[in-house]
View 1: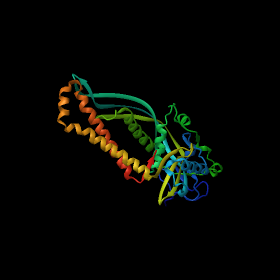
View 2: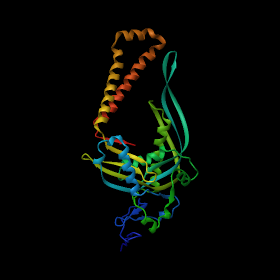
View 3: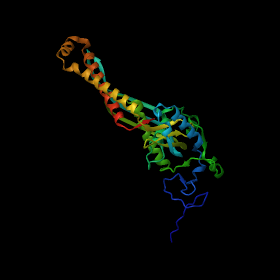
View 4: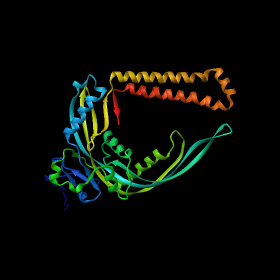
Length: 343
């Protein structure tokens, strides 16, 4: 005879559906976060206090009042829904090392000579990944990126680093009575510690590429290795205000602790599209203007007699034409979109 153990909610007693990857299981009936494998007793699981819903609504109304994109539309903005979540994010302290080989150019005897450079690096970094792979959310990704961009001091223990970055509190403070006071819902995690370590190491590798690979260069090879020395799980508040305007639905995502905007998706007004069109036309004009000399015989005669300035005479128009092309392409794409994304 097979005995199947059914896990039940610590608060209401309802049955819980769990997987081996679950770290915290949120009850689908009452919303209480139940600890899986007693994670509430662990020292490196934290949560961060959230601003109340009414404060998030106040921040949104203030944004509508002062943002020039809403001129003439303020009376038409209707809040459709406000939702708050405690987003699970894995943080890790990674001790890494690696190398990069890339192409560089050195001027020798009036010519550019191609050389291969090799750099090695070592670094301690703190990186983070959302603990929810099953559902992609652009606002959650933007929230995780914000922590890495904000800067930090790396301490020996990840908990001390987190206390420097944000006002974290141990998950053990979440008693049933304390839980009653929280407005945002807790989101389940999709993977546990071991999977998180692999994801954090991958993120540290990507961040090392962003830092150590020079821009606009040809990379021959890149290698990264290291280990995750310490790890922590943080449940961080994220609020979203969905609103309707002129037949479309948009949203603003807020850092639920500090009240700062994390991500905004808003309509593109006509005046902004006109500005994008003018910028794109300027780019087209610049690209056309600075490619014209290459079809001029007098220009090539000038280059032939310029000697030391020949390289600059060839490169500068090409760079300006490339800049104009990039301007036209970038603003042309923005002009074609009906929504604007701000991070």
